[in-house]
Image (tube, rainbow, N blue to C red; front, side, top):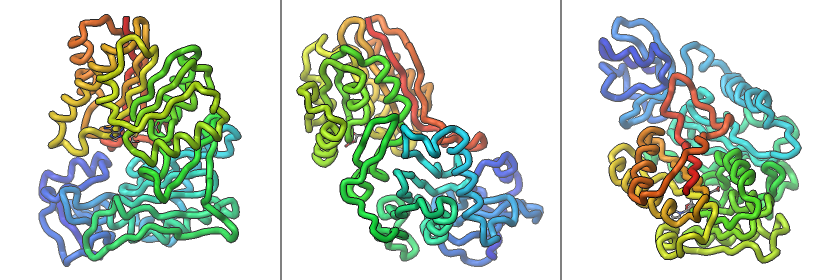
Length: 397
Ligand code: SAH
């Protein structure tokens, strides 16, 4: 196995179990690893530290283990079983109301570079590193062992996420499919609400599982309200609001495909009762054009404005502008549920952007709640970067 030696004084983050080795921390590589190879990492004094996946880039090694277990044939099964047991502990496995959850959340499950979302028997895998992509067949095999006969299919959707290097040319497709399984019109249950999930054509793995609890929170406040759901995707927040008895719900997304699926989800839940309106438009333009006081509850859940640190300043400005418009338009005594899923934007920076937005409008604004990512999007305590979803519930006078 290829050995990587760290520079003196650059071992500290690994000693604190942070799962990344940056290229600048490497003193010497003995041999020439290919992307995705498992390499052994050594301290400058030659003592062994960990095993990880090698990749060309700023993050050169993603740590898989501090022990030799990574070399054992049952490594993948053990890690995936541990992830499964955690979801079972928090009540997501075998839950009659919810049959979809994130099974593997990268570093949060000690599997950096891997995402696996579970949809009612189907696992959708996304590799964000060459190493995880190269391990996909072993991962699929491990999923079969963990779920047994209940597993319907494993779909690999890594083409958009795995770095296109080292001759990897990922093509999305099934790694396993049980006889007779069809993905046509496949739907899941989330807190008793039904949603079609199309992992082949939808965004990410097909559905945004990370908003499950925040959708339920919107449901708690939506009865009798006029609701505006901006960046609605397939209508997660809208369905909860309609189920809770909202008077009217307007859902806005710029993706034609998302808006079409949203319509299907409205029908699937039996909400073709005239209370819902779908709009395919730019949410920021739409918000600017609506009159004040029309909506009592506005959900603002944009895509990640800052995909990396370099985009931070512009992203914060965009959050401020968007939130200023939402705060100025919401009815008196109204609620704004505002989110950021940009990992590069800290909770504090986001709160500051929303604070500046509120100050711009001059309205009295109280923070009623602070929202997070749910437990199945677990954060490894040694990897605070795993925390990415944050939100504020604002009461606007
Ligand atoms: N709230 C959604 C998830 C939002 S993901 C849920 O609960 O499932 C972000 C969404 O923003 C995507 O659906 C994307 O199509 C949409 N989007 C991106 N840019 C947009 C824009 N400028 N205007 C409207 N929608 C946009």
